[in-house]
Length: 440
Image 1 (tube, rainbow, N blue to C red):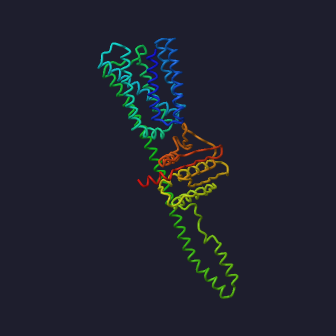
Image 2 (spheres, helix red, strand yellow):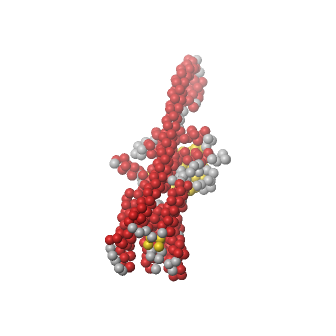
Image 3 (cartoon, rainbow, N blue to C red):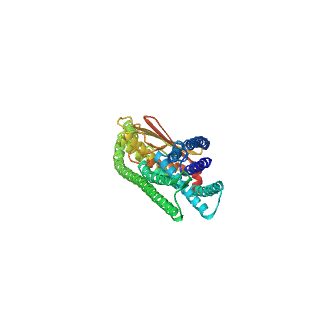
């Protein structure tokens, strides 16, 4: 009984460490450790009761594994991702640790002759821990970032689909587990090799599916960015054409205004001439278009979306402090502000009432650039774990994902708040980090 509980604890510890590497925590490390100790103690106690009451019977076997799968409650409580993504990660870690157990049992059986059962299990456990730590280190160095980015992009339907494969493998392993001897019913090198080959081949296909979905969504996001930039270029071209046309008309009309003023002065109507000049000066003809900020790129970009908002009867107020020499790339600024404003316009456009408004502000606070967008919306929110996902298509909102990725690139963060009527997003980027990136 003690060896069974010890094996369970080793499995839970390894699965926990793998999940910590591959998933994103929403709790502190101390909270995770305390929760794991409490959870593992409860599981160990229930396993001890099960073995005492039922012994090593087939019923006890399934109760034992059912108790192990209750670990999903701990996973669900600790990590940010949606339930199917956490379930897939947990099952995959469980499969991996049992494949390692199979390999360790085969190695010890083949290359050693140990009479003592306790010594045999001790050597198996030590070898298993060494292999698990090696895989854990490999996952941390090579898989951590790519896995998080890929699993973040896929939608829940795809997550449930790939999770189905891991569940089938788990059930297959359970069926072949000998609870009396605490080992698997696989004999010989070829049977273990074939099992390992088929399991990892399946996971390779799952990885290809995840990578393909991730690549498709990334390409779609890049296409949206390029399309927005082309729309901005078209808007700038239209504005330039109108400005040239306006200048030509003004140049043509200036001659008539000069003749009218000259005739008034020749006839001595100085008062009328002065009044005519004042009216001409106050007219919209000579008024410059308002500048939303000193950064020319952002100024043009925001004006483009202000024109779109105006066409959709959305009130758009701005108060921006973004200097020209901010040392942040124009592309990143356009991606962040374009995606944020576009999301706000789309949210306002779904409202039935006329209280549609967007308030865009930015300021430099200490070493940080803070961009804040507050917009009205209909109160509809969809979330994937702690992540917001699109209400117009399956999967995470790519615009928000791009904003978050760029904010993290500059050691910043994105803070989101909302009520039933107002949605607020604050984007913080560290300017000192930005300067270091440009220098390097």
